[in-house]
Image (cartoon, rainbow, N blue to C red; front, top):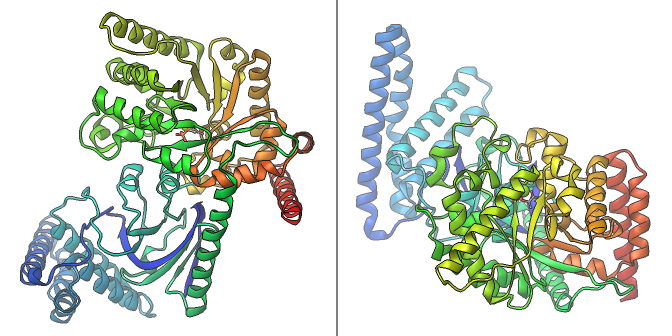
Length: 584
Ligand code: PEP
Ligand code: MG
């Protein structure tokens, strides 16, 4: 049994056989085959072996011609492995007897052999393990026809272990079969992590290199609460994981019941708790968990699992579904936040060349760059707005001129719709995300020109502390409890209060119970959180008085170390919940 520690990004505990995707993402689509397909699959495997051997021979010839025969001979070792009758027979056995796909069989057999060699104390044999890894990649590439972008079609539960998953790959995972995933890279507020939460798939990221220590088919436990991944767990660990999954389920049920009513603090101050969504169908998940509207709809995910550009009708239908789920509650539609790590396959050519996409053409900048796409979305928003309380919000605003330009496009769109006599609502509230330090610093000026702010802590932290939100190497610098972050949020909340406009927090920080008393103490009365967190956050608010929240905010503001603030906030929440439970 091997325990790896990473960053817990989506709660829940699950155990299932591993499906190892390695660096070549989503490389194979099938895990098992039908009995009548055995001959065809054996044929496919043999063809892949012969193509791989031909490729090795070409590499050997090229190396000999360019560098000399001595180098060409290196490939002889690869060739011997690719033609090893015992190895090939073992793969074929799994295809014939277990009805495994050739891809899964190749991965399982070759990784097992590689690990056996790696464990030996012999440098020569250790090298052969690397050869086996190369051979495995070559065979998988030939088997997949080099199409690395196809969806996984699964028929039984698995846990996906991968070097990395992009948001669009994550968006395609089927929660019915993907019980959890764990990746070597990734950060706590990366979009992949956010999607895992949206799909309600337990996930751990940022584990560092570990894929070479696990074989496909081996049982693993992913603990998305603690951030642990256990490879080949023993009986006791399996039992503990099952117990923890059961007790989580019963706690969820209890909190769900309590969360159905609107939310008030213990001293009767109304706090609105909204849901964050990426897909329209999640609006229903939010409503079922007691959300009082949608505080953040990340519309760019409309682009994620498709090959073509969404039409105005696609946008409209998605917004309609959300607003019909919440016909008399606020629904905040954020305009496209494309770019950075949210790059759909069809747009890769536009974005892929930039070395620092988080600081590049992203979000509102993309929308203002391509006004036709932006207008299409705004038309759909204004049309859907006749069906409920829709509000529009611009992401990543960094200057007043940018905000004014976006608002002017919105006005143009309203005029066009009027001229075309298309039913719409032009006077919807217009808000902006505060997620760039320049916007926070200029909050008083911005507050005069919008109806509401929504503080996006995910980006605000990465830009304030210069720590990429997706990079585990800088995860320790990406600190939500940093005093600079608290100060920035306070400044924005004060500017909003002075201008008498609403302010919501919608970053992941808000789904973490630790920070909720602090936000309330800073005068923030609207929180927008991931659907799964809604019942727990509402429960916490019920245990809290505004006086206590204010005291916590004052005390935290006097501390100057992130670690100190973190410990203090955690201790306060623990105390609060313990007292509350005694009272119940
Ligand atoms: C944020 O940055 O906090 C936010 C909510 O936006 P996103 O996570 O989609 O970038
Ligand atoms: Mg953001």
